[in-house]
Image 1 (tube, rainbow, N blue to C red):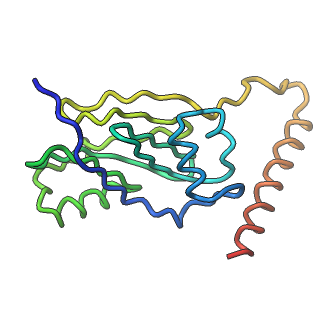
Image 2: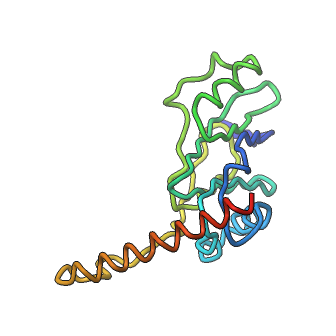
Amino acid sequence: MDSQYVSKVVDLTDPKKNIIYNMTHEEAVNIVKSGDVEAVRKIDGQFCLVSVEGKTIRMARSIGRPLRYFIAKRAVGPQLVVAERIDTIFDYLKKEGMDDQFHPSYTRMVPAHYVTKIELLGCPDPNPVYDRFFTPERNKFTPDNPEQIGKNYIGVVYEEIKKWLQFRAKR
């Protein structure tokens, strides 16, 4: 079977729903585009990001933001549709007259805390490469001191709530 390059990428995500504390949306997309998981790890907040560079697409998301993709077949070549929700993908395909190709199980979820890289070959389906950017140390705390674990947990929760409130106040 001959492979066809994806001829078009449709990004239906809403950047305004991202909550990124330490950089602009464009800066975060460029970091994802680089494929540098160490740099992606430094994006502070909740996000789903899509970058396209030539025939390479990279997508990344945090746990708080969903991100799915679907490859539609067009006469001019395959098309990659990316959205936060399955129904958004379906509505787009319906508007484009391609809803007969759709089944929810044909969509793919971008896993949280990974940079998902796809070389945009449409047929056959792309073979994604996953690089984890969130790699917390396992068993960092010993179970014999639950009070310290609780203090650490509440401290982190406090800092995250404080950042979020400051972010909301700026809007």
